Amino acid sequence: FYIYDFRAVKAMRHFSSLQPRVSLSDGRGDNEYSKFAEKCAYLVDFCNREFDLYPEPRHIDNLLLRFNER
Image (cartoon, rainbow, N blue to C red; front, side, top):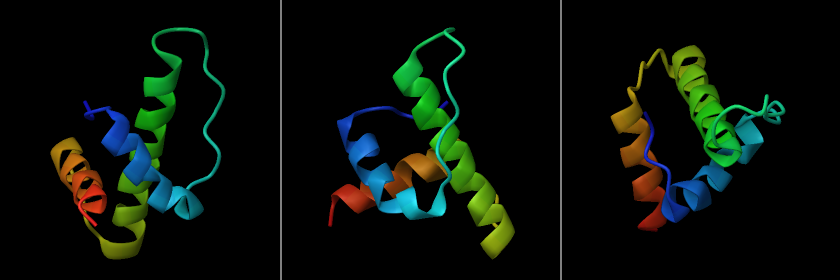
């Protein structure tokens, strides 16, 4: 699972141009985390397609953390 906090949400905004709009929640679970996890999945798919990389959730967490250090 992906680490979800203020820093991760803020950093994810840097990748908004790479991602389509997230789907509507089906009412199960936490709506905000569901949207965040879907964005993370889009980011993983982008890395697969564009760079032939297969990042794991921890890699995505570290990437987002780096963007907050800027």
